[in-house]
Length: 107
Image 1 (spheres, helix red, strand yellow):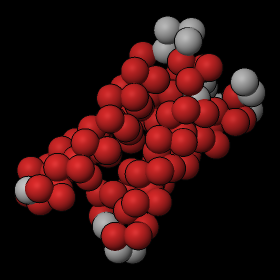
Image 2 (image 1 turned 90 degrees about the horizontal axis):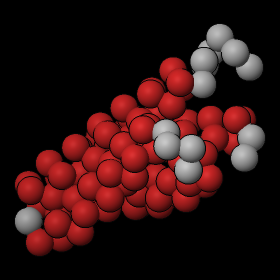
Image 3 (image 1 turned 90 degrees about the vertical axis):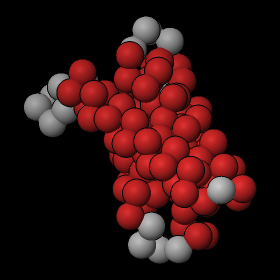
Image 4 (image 1 turned 60 degrees about the vertical axis):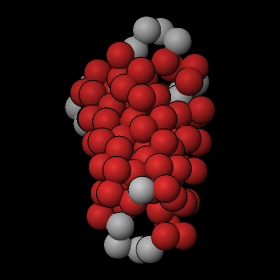
């Protein structure tokens, strides 16, 4: 898997996490953001096989985000908190992956 594809998937996940955190575009955008995070998780899975700690954090964040969305159907405050924790984990994973790959210093 190319470094550019991993970076693009992580950028997509980071933008989606920001949408989940801020919720500026409504429910439909939040659902699309959740799907984007899961898609980024699947797309970066080959890069995670190398024992990259950022991928484990990305996976945990994706799981928490989806779990938060499901919990929000039952109890909105708890689901919201879990989704926020997931989004923060996704953002942290994207930052760690960028730092590990030397971004923006190396192309």
